[in-house]
Length: 455
Ligand SMILES: *Cc1c(COP(=O)(O)O)cnc(C)c1O
Image (cartoon, rainbow, N blue to C red; front, side, top):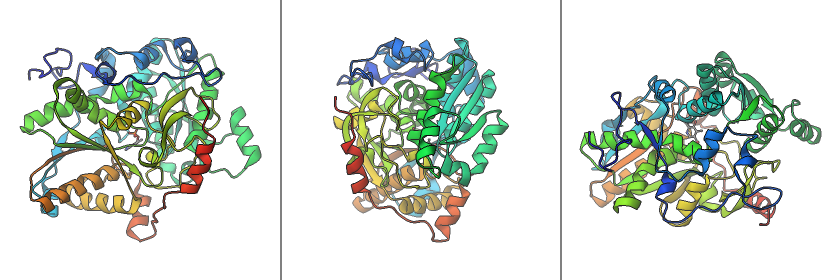
């Protein structure tokens, strides 16, 4: 189809995969805040990031070019599962008796079962191009770890995964998948890093957290010549890679002959949300369209709806640069909700900026209400959603029900970021009534926010 932006690279290739990623930094109405050095408090330069990331990714991190071409080998790997399907949820519409049309983009068709390979493949490729032989990373519930392990297998890289202790013990199946792809997985906090040993000395039974695991992986990469670090969300280059979701959806919605009124995705660090919504937001900024965009987060880790917009660290050990984002404080450890991918204290700086200036909306939902939506979705559409994705489904269903109340049609598009085949124990807890809601932990957040760095 002809590209409606009048540009060439966004046109999908012969396999209907985008030829370029979309960089929203070219179209932002307000400039992003600079990233600061944790020691000096001054803006960082490429050299500060070089121990952790290959130069190509550092370049993408600070790029303001609208289109960044997707390298051939990355598109070849995307071809294993892209384009991902866009479905209309007709049976869910019927079950809700709504005049709304509900569409969802399904990222669970990737080999690792979520949207995360979209960036894992790109990151593994650029690292290998620059001679890196080993990647270190963290994983919460194991989605990112499995995506990077898969990508490492494709490009011949060793992968070391620091897996949050609680999931390591409770969710062994993702670990088996990572090991099958050839990765080495340790429980975090681990005795293999300086920081891990420090945490273990203080609390030998620590269940770990994403913030702690990031600290360990960053230390691993910073102290080894052959190793770089890979992050599965939050950073600009990660959000960039995920825009294949929204670029495909733009064309697929056009094929369906509809325009979405509202676009919805769950948000942990913000990458699948950005992936679906940024190409649409780009149209709002460039062409004055009026897509409404909603990010949905868990009530137990509500960085955008209850956090502050301030400079903070991305990890617990305070090793990462300072970024301006919605945060609950780098010391904040969210309750063990089942949507492990949404248990993070911060939010991507680009998503935070858009929220702060009113270009997107945010709402939070409890996990029982999310699981209820996930179960209803599975019974209508057949796909078992990841617990993270059920947050988006909850909001999409609420929008559809509001359309029924108002008696007005509405076109809803949401991202189904992954399947829940490794999360059946969580569904079992929900179905047996054992799943609990966690109230917003106001006191813990107040304490964590008191420890924000002063810049
Ligand atoms: C990791 C994950 C998320 C949350 O991460 P984002 O960066 O916010 O997208 C959401 N859904 C699934 C299935 C995930 O694996």
